[in-house]
Length: 201
Image (cartoon, rainbow, N blue to C red; front, side):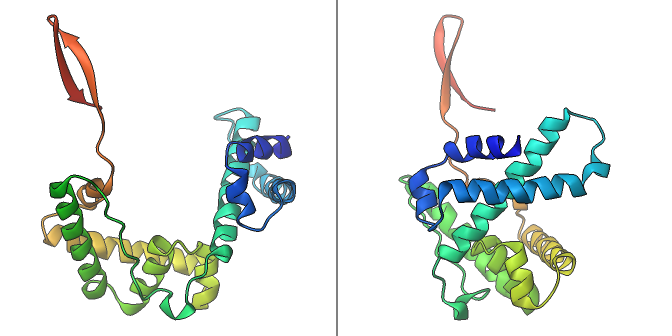
């Protein structure tokens, strides 16, 4: 059951992308199915019946598959170990609108500054490695010599301090994220026989 669901999910992804991870498509699906089955069995007491059992089990399988893809993508990415947790990646600002590009550059500069000044060295290292260099949580925990629970708390505290520092600049974290979101396309509609437009809500 889970094997079929995972295969269907992976089939919607590019096999070329999976091949770049140096993994066989079928082997990847089988590995994820086995891990998902074990996890479903371990979590049976958490199933509350709010949805169909198959839906609940499928959601676990998809999370397992996404996490495994992330781990394998990380292994296939050549990042200098000396830069882990230290160097912020360059934000690829390629928006064709000059005003929006400038806004993104300014926001990115503020974010980089606050990461340096508002966080402890340990918080900065963990947050940069996970959130910006896309290092999976279990890899970060192993790399930093800690466990997942301690790492969760470290990153949670780092995000709260970063949010507070942003507020001191008059910016919420949601506003900051929105600056880097692609603009929503305008949708035409007709009112009183006239064509108007509005941003999608």
